[in-house]
Structures are given as C-alpha cells and as structure tokens.
Amino acid sequence: MIDPVALRSLVAVEAHGSVGAAAAALDYTPSAVSQQIKRLETQTGVQLLERQGRGVLLTEAGRTLSEAARSLLADMERLESRLHGDSGETVGTVRLATFATAYRGVVVGAIGRLRSTAPDVVLRPDEIDPWDAVDAVAAGTHDLALVHNWEPLPLAIPDHLEVRDLGRDRADVLVHESHPLAARRSIGVRDVLDEHWASVAPGSICHQWLQKMYADVGRSPRIAHVALEFATHVTLVAAGEAIALVPRLGRGPLPAGVVAVPIVDPISERTVSLVWRSTMTASPALAVAVDCLAAEASRDLRPLSGD
Picture 1 (cartoon, rainbow, N blue to C red):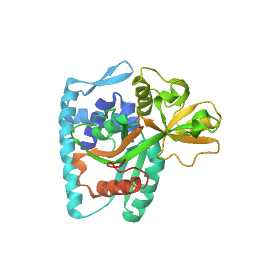
Picture 2: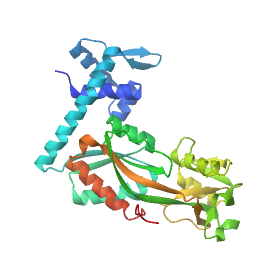
Picture 3: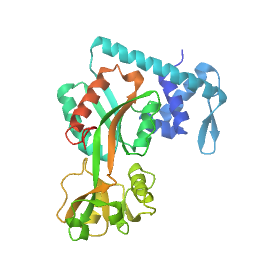
Picture 4: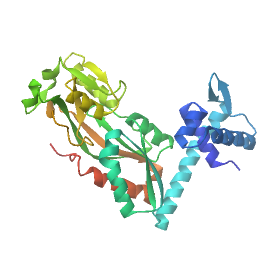
C-alpha cells in the first residue's frame, strides 16, 4: 500500500523544487524525504525523480502520482478534520505561517489565550512573507497563515483556501523630532517626495506599497537604507538618517526623538487576514486557533467597517 506520508513528501518536492527545500518545509531531514521517495519508488515500481543540475525534477510518472496524491491527501485531511469534529476532541498542532509584526502584535498573545482555552492545542509559528505563507498553506506545509495586503494591492488566494479578514492596520510616517514634518497632524505623499527612506527589502509587500505610493505621483522613493526589521527603521529615524513608513501593529512604544505622523494621501492601510485550507474547516484545533488569533487581533486592528 502506498504510504501517505511519503506522498506528501513527493508533493512537497514538486512544489519546492528540491529534496532539501521540501524537507525544510515539512520539518523533516533531507535524508528522511529521500528515503520516503525511494520507498514510493519501491512500492510503485517506477522512477519518480530525476537529477537536473543540483536539483531534481519529477519524472512523468512522478507528476502523475503527485497530481493524484494532492487530491487523495485533501480527501484524507477533510475526513480527519470531520472525525476530530465529530469526536469533540480539541487537540493537535497547528502550523502557522505569520508575518513579523503580527508575530509580535498578535501571535504571542494568542499563544497565551490558546494555552488557557485549549491547552492540548499547540500553535507552532514560522515567520514567512505573506505571498510565501499563502503558498505554504496551499501546498499543505502549514495549516494556517496570518497574512496582510496593502489596499488595493492584490494578494492572490487559491480557490481551495478559506479567508477570514480580521481588521485593518494603518502605517504612519516616522520622522525625527527635529524634522519639519514632526509638528504636522497629517501629511500626504507629496510632502515627502524628496525624503530619504528606510525600507524593507525589494520584493516584499511593504516595499511594493511604498513604490506604489510614489508611482501614483510619477516619482520613485529615494531609498537610503534597506533593512528587514522595522525596529532597524525606527533606529535609523531616531538617528536622523531617514524617515520610514511603519505599521502600528506590533510597533510598540517609540523611542524618544521619534514622531509618528499619519499619512492620509493616500491612507496607508493594510488588511490582516487568516487563511486555511477548506479541507481543514471542520478541525476543532484549527477553529480554536483561529478564534484565539482573531480575539487577540481585535485589540489592535481597526474594524473592517471603521474609518
């Protein structure tokens, strides 16, 4: 009989392009994934992988098996979720993909809520950019994703995933207290056309939003510093080296000398959402994790209908 655990490894290899990347996504060792693929080859009597440079590709037989495996694994997951729901047991591990500010501003508090509400459910977070987080849930390497997107930039959600919007998070422009804009009640993008910015890395959603703000007025932002952590941006602002667009969620108290000025033209606002596979909707462990994350997020996020 074909091993479903090995099937999941094959699907992960196809999705991630290598045994090593599949192992990292599944939290296995590369050796374990290789052994599972070899076991599948023994069980099926066909070659499933072939070398391509330093990576691997699925053979035609491998692609056929992987396509069937995705449907089979989805059916098994749906059945498992229903059985747990029917039994009333709220137990298990929920693998969560989350972005950095939500990790600080939502996830840490939700872990405490979950410990009190359902102590037999373990929330295991990994920090992953929203685009990759959606892919991780879609591929089955994570059960749940906490994601964001800046309106109106799209975040594509596959049809087999469910979405629950939690609320909206705004960003402010941070400036040094000696900056001419520090005394303003609000600003627009035309007020900062020639400023030097601290930004996250190109390719991220937050960087894309900063670029779009400027594209709408026919300019490009002058990015003086690139750093992954918003905490570094705050430090650069405190030193007078740059200004920064920093979300309120997970930001914490600002240090002396740093002033947050709301930007209202355009309003810099992102929607924060939870995403999971439809096949897991009946899972009690997933449901309680979703509720705890939503409850924690409600403390800091603006209601979807709010101004």
